[in-house]
Length: 161
View 1 (cartoon, rainbow, N blue to C red):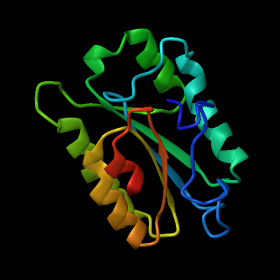
View 2: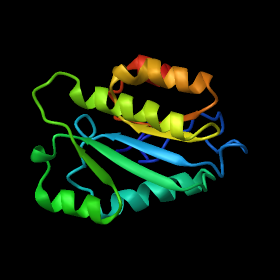
View 3: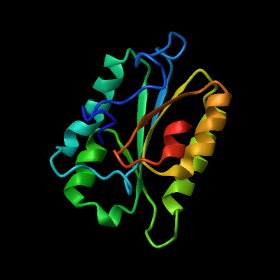
């Protein structure tokens, strides 16, 4: 789940990496593409939600945080699922086998979230998939703050969104 720089931090869209004043107290919705960014084997899944929240606080984001993970839960060990659920991470089962099904589900849910949560608000996407670049660009144009946490192999269009 580490971002660029290898520190495991969450890079910000703000130039200095700190929250801009209008976004600091705003809601933060975390969208985790668990298919493309799996729980690292070396990471205790009980600590993931706290690690995300702590990284956001270090960047001066103080708003309420919600975390949703998307993927085929049949491919996630039961102990990991239980750990994630116990820390407030909402697991959304998207069966494998349908191309880009998780991405489409995340996109739809992200856009519905925008309808219910007007800007200023923050999106944190944990993915390396380029399928999100247009939606993130559109959200940014509507005054939402976009944060990315991505694997080193993340696509250039996603990073440019």
